[in-house]
Image (cartoon, rainbow, N blue to C red; front, side, top):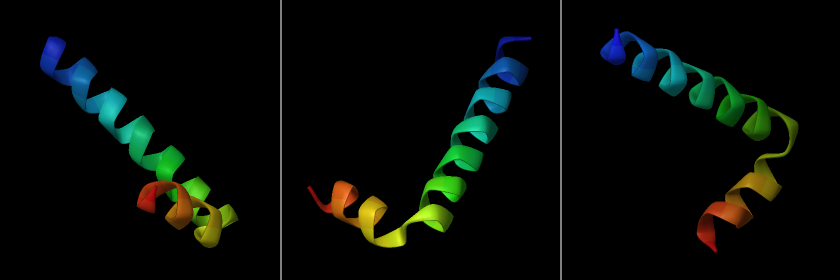
Length: 34
């Protein structure tokens, strides 16, 4: 159960990252660089 929950959490984070990059690659890249 724990492994599955962790995987779901990771997938959610990945989806959020994809949305951020899609909305503004420049903003996300700047935050990552800093």
